[in-house]
Image 1 (cartoon, rainbow, N blue to C red):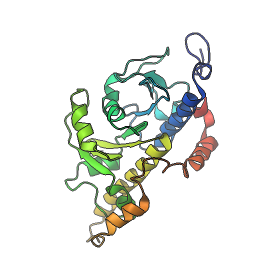
Image 2: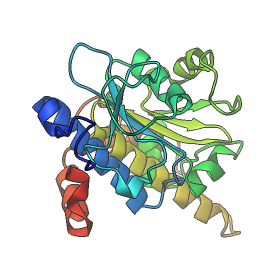
Image 3: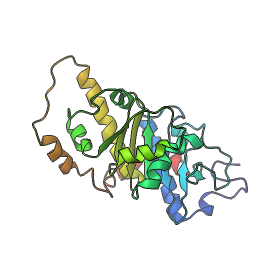
Length: 258
């Protein structure tokens, strides 16, 4: 059986709507991009996307696959409790969906959710002051950024209520002592937010390691920059960059589309 087929030998693409297939391609591309930029953690984080339609179904990575080998067909369809709802040869990690399900259930425009354990993201998550306005990139993110205190490995569903409370109406979150999370109306939106948040964390780690006095922006400048960056917009912030990102993936390995 090929990766593009289920147990019946029928291609996954032939079993889903065109709208779902497009989400599958975008989600597979998001996994590949996270791997491309070095933000994956072997098999231990997740990216999920809502399946278009009235059912509360979602797509997530097959547990055990590295991010750079995930394809549109290999993604697994699950419900809000992490149960598989479409035949597949793959398994999922239901515990890994705890954080994602909280956001999907409670934020109307959170059709895509990304969670990472990157070196710089975790480093900033452990710093008491969190993300500082040390760069333009950070200032664009700050007004759309929330924090959630570490409670242990996210296995218990009662943490979901507290995570959603802490996220509020934001689209970016630093999970203290843990990592980063972004959400968006689409995979492009969630990825662009992640790109800015990850880069802001990297810039902060490098600036703090320089051992010299740092310059902070004047009062009101971070808020002005955030408004100019428009990260608070609910739809479409990632559309402009997305085609170029897909072209990059296509040059490297277009198999994510299979």
